Image (tube, rainbow, N blue to C red):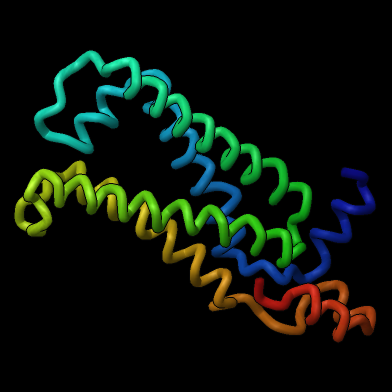
Length: 177
């Protein structure tokens, strides 16, 4: 990034609310990096969190599925750090990131609940700390992404494009997906 671009971004109001900027570019990558680490290097932690009767080592097909999950987490991390970092004020790009990853979050929550159902442990009182953490963090991520896409806390009419008189063009770019 050039010095002029850095200065402009520091002095121009951003259409991305500071909470979402912190969440998507700092907190979310930390959680994603943790997921990558556990998936590739300590899969027994992940597997035990999904099934209290899990016994190590994982089967070959489980290892393959874990590797696929780890690859997905790697893609998410690259998008969080690379794409959102490269386009720090582009609401449309941030929406295109948040929608599919939010969909993945919802599917992960459904998968956790499906697993609990298969174990006859859908009753909340039967949940262990692992289920609360797994489901809670993933659901929180989905809620934050949905709030961002629904424009909760995202100011309309702010940012450099509107200051230059390009309000209609910027509003069109920011339309919901």
